[in-house]
Amino acid sequence: MTLHKLKHGLVIASLLGVLSGCASTPATNSETNSVGELNDKSFDLLFATEFPVDSEADALARGASSLNGGDVDKALFFYVRALQFNPENSELLAHIGGIQMTRNNTVMAKRAFLMAKKYDPDHVPALEGLGLIYMADGKTEQAVVELRAALAKNDRLWRTHNALGVYADKSGDFAAARRHYDASLSINSDASHVLNNRGYSKFLSGDVEGAIVDLYEAANGQGFRNAWANLGMVYAEQGLYDDALSTYQNVMSEAHAHNNIGQIALRNGDISKALHFLNEAIRLSPTYFPEAEENLKLLARLN
Image (cartoon, rainbow, N blue to C red; front, top):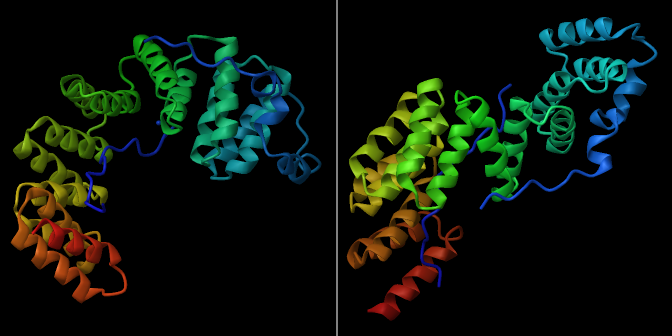
């Protein structure tokens, strides 16, 4: 059966901008022991001859200068060089982890965070970084352990609050989710994906009016495009199909919007509206929506 199912609209978004008590999986030696594994080997070939390093201070200064100049690859080269003078510098290890996160290299980021945590088990950026990586990887129990540990040391971590809000929503604890989203937004009011998450959470908990306010502000006020899709879904679920159509069309084709609304109308039991929107989806894009045709066949069987 191809009936439309609600897609979870909660977003962890960017992992880091620097995303029953089960212990984290022990790190392997390869993840925690080799400074040389924190960087792309090609950087050494590219920079080592041209930029020799005399000391830790020299490497740190040149790394900071490169990063400020927007040359992330060169910055990483110098920071890893600095680590070779002081391999147990957990602050620098976590900084490298954060840089790798901005490059979407979560493998090396995780390795750096694990090394930082090895030398300082209470290092907050390392705990948060690991937690966000685990959450994005679907390792929820490990993520929650790390994130709660980070929050216990510093309750001003807006990304951690957001991630724990997503976890609470998926666990059905909407009150806890709301507390986390509120805390996150009190720290960073410009985090549009968090506002989207809070709006979606309000919808899940039955606060439709509150959901519409948050989702509209996230979409229209702060430019978070995914919030338009969530807002369209909320309108359609309430039977406000015209509002849903105009909202969906901010982020999808007219045919796709009609198909989505038709599926939701079908689930709502609104048969005439479902027929209208599904037929329109097929008319607007006959080759693109075999799913709409399947839903029409299902509708015919139901009648």
